[in-house]
Image 1 (tube, rainbow, N blue to C red):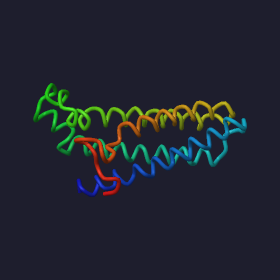
Image 2 (image 1 turned 90 degrees about the horizontal axis):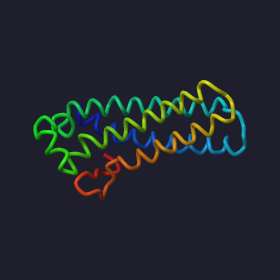
Image 3 (image 1 turned 180 degrees about the vertical axis):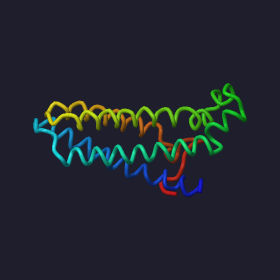
Image 4 (image 1 turned 90 degrees about the vertical axis):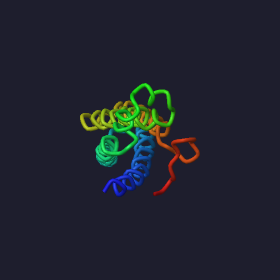
Length: 153
């Protein structure tokens, strides 16, 4: 089950990145043209938020059950984990960065849900852009020494 969820976690990142890019471009367009928030904007943001929350639940499961999260801290001690870049990435940086990114996505979605005003595009755009930057910074891309993972499972 753990391996299957790990593969799903890997594949779901591509869906989130795609939806995030679409949402950013739609909100940028809405911000530039000063158009009100549309139903399509709301749907994309909703699918993005749902995907991100599913990803978060799968990630929490992996952090608590897998060997790189909580068990790494328990087995090695917090001091050792913080001194080792690879252990620190998996036990602290990855989960914290993704959690903050998902909070940005959720707040952006909440702003769009509550208002149809054109000014909401700006808030959603910046929150989603910050989420994208955080996600790109904390994904274990191939080539990152000690933490890199393949692009596809």
